[in-house]
Image 1 (cartoon, one colour):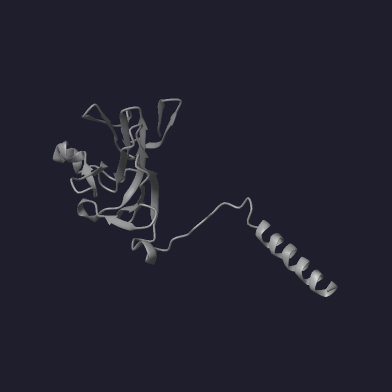
Image 2 (tube, helix red, strand yellow):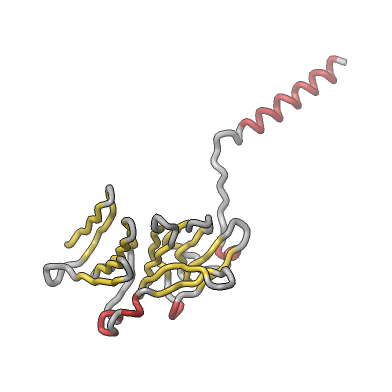
Length: 183
């Protein structure tokens, strides 16, 4: 009887010790490009107001609803470099040659809506990688090295560095204030 009790107690305590090793550890799941069927390089990530996760990928924008991956190709199959979410849950996307936002079509599928299509061709041709996308309230900033684009109230403005030959290197938001480094 003693051996049975000893064995039982040993099993109970060793099992509880093994389970306690998982306590306090964050749940982490890595996905491979083979699983999500996309490019191996991911640049940015955002979550919309519905809880859908978007990943800026070398092949476009990936959408993940917690169980299913879907690739949303961008115009000219460009890379999605940067993302930011507005207060109303809209995901804005900067690409390797433009920018826009994610919307939902009539059947509930996510689609990319370009914002740069209203720009003159001479300006569109100069758009390079949009490395950073920032949002303050209803104003969205898309930053390339050579040009800053501001989208606010349906209007799109562009700005160049004040000094010729200089570039925009860093931008960020702090306490609802936009900061931009020109170097």
